[in-house]
Length: 186
Length: 186
Image (cartoon, rainbow over all chains, first blue to last red; front, side, top):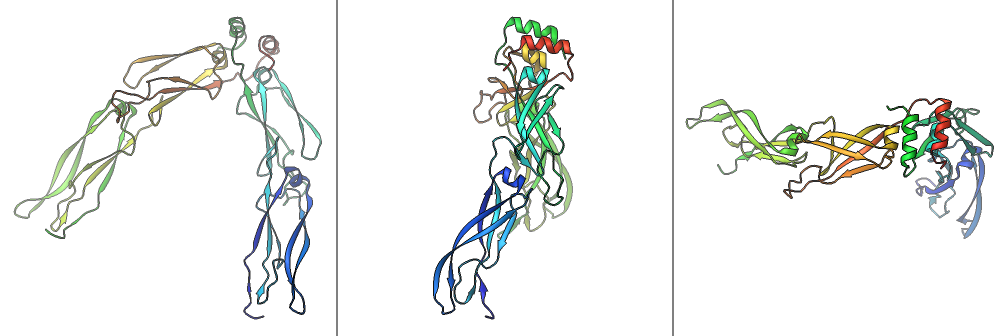
């Protein structure tokens, strides 16, 4: 077999939800490949590959199954490579080991305080209280509620809650007069 | 002179203020170059080049003075090229033919109305009234108060005023109670 060349690797995208990347999971992927038996006869076979996703894995992480491509005389079967990608999440975005969430707050809640109710990626209820004035673009950091760090088991990044403050469209003259009395004039 | 090669062009940056690019101006640039007389003697000379900046010129505009480089036997003097660049302005930024200005408004003015006083690039006072609620990131467009369009004399872009709303750092419980009564609850 000296001099046999290996086919170039076959890459497949493996989309994972943030929940799967948070908790870890096992993904089973069915592949179909040509296999050559002792007598040199080739037949089509399906095989199931099992991929262990560890908590905290990032997009771009590669899992390689060596020589799982088609068997053909005179060549070494290609490696099959799965590349982790991240599915969009409706509530959280990932930034490295941190998670971010943008909370839409009516102006009155941004000024007077608000309670934001979230569900973590492992299904726990999480309440974030905002008692200071929530300025647009400001962040409230919740320590340890980010993604697990796969390289440092047991540690997690932070959750960073951002505020998208919704202003009222219009205000009456009466409301404006009241606000002029209540709010500092800069 | 057949076969004489020209030296590569010499580029110089010509920084202009937004005021100069708005009104147009004449810039005089002194250059020093070698000149060869009839008898073949070379001497150093200074020369003043006059550059007519037209209203609305953009950064990157080039003005070429052909063959104003050093005269040397056997070569054609280089062209001298001035490239317009824009100096930073404390009040306005240019975006194509538009000007933008970011007005820092205390929250109370953003909600109750404000008057923004500016001085245009040709020195006129300009008052921009904000009567609607000024949301952060929103823009108020003032038609025709942007940069002149050099290719369509007599027309100008717009001025776009943006709002950077300054929230109070803290509010007392009394202020919060008042705000809860005044502002819509989303």
